[in-house]
Image (cartoon, rainbow, N blue to C red):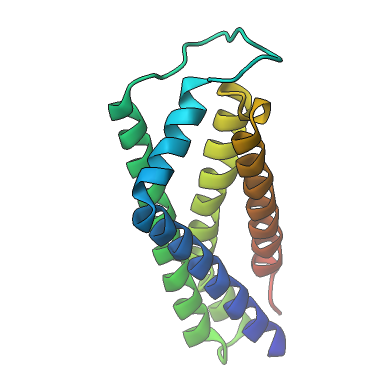
Length: 162
């Protein structure tokens, strides 16, 4: 039974992390837009100056991408919160009920992985080559940390309870 409490807490922390990052982006909106604009413009790329695709120079596109990021962070946080609540409600039930309650937890954590692994690492790191700038390297390091932690939590939460 104690392991179920740990799973609930970890999913709640995924929710909290996602919602806090979304909120930080909103209260630092200009800084967040600057970061997205800097990353998508591919400015400061001396190591690999050429790219197979175009840089995105439009401020409007940067605002759109930032809106997508904040929306997905918020959605991931809310889904994980629902998942934590579902797990909490099922904590005293049988193994089948607890395992069945993991859906929103997995969906919220999975969406968080889409944000930090998919968008920041795969697209930001590989396409926009964020690793070439100091600002980008910091974001990639953070994205790796978040994605790794969330992935480990999801593996642990998804482990079958008996």
